[in-house]
Amino acid sequence: MEYLISMFIDNELDLNEKIAFVEKVRADAAFTDETVALLQQEKILREDCVYPAPCVAFEAESKWERYLAPLARPIGFAACGFAAALVFAFSFLIVPGDTEVRNRFVIYRPDIAQAEIAGTFTDWKRLPMKKIGGSGYWEILLELPEGEHRFTYILEGRDRYADPTILTRETDDFGGENTILKVEGKA
Image (cartoon, rainbow, N blue to C red):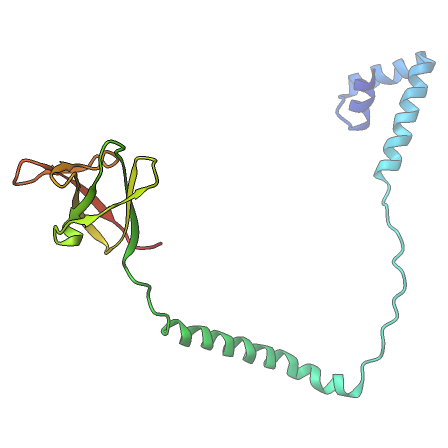
């Protein structure tokens, strides 16, 4: 029955349905009481909830405020313009960072006693890698410039070993494989 009451309140019934609704209200006292209660609730909900605003006393402006107020806006604009000019001027003084990126080369070979790395970034000169404790890992940190670099690991001073974590490779002129690493600048 609440459904009919709700539709009546929201004016969603056509004339025939409204007639049937009024007849139902007249015939059933409990339904009449429920309808009147919901209509009173709807009346309360639709009332404006306006609370009086408290009185606020404003101080009269002083003589100085009267003369300084017209200057406040132009001074604010001037300050904003000055700040923008400073930002613009100092933006030319920003020195771009170096284009070299620090890279950590790591391999896991617990079965060897010596590991080195050689590549285009070392002019194919061998650089020794450092063993990390007894973990079997070997590492070296190198600053590399942006660009594409080729390198390989040299194990035990003689065996060439391509980096297993980088899939981009090429065969060199000596029948070995070089890993290709692309270095992008700092973000």
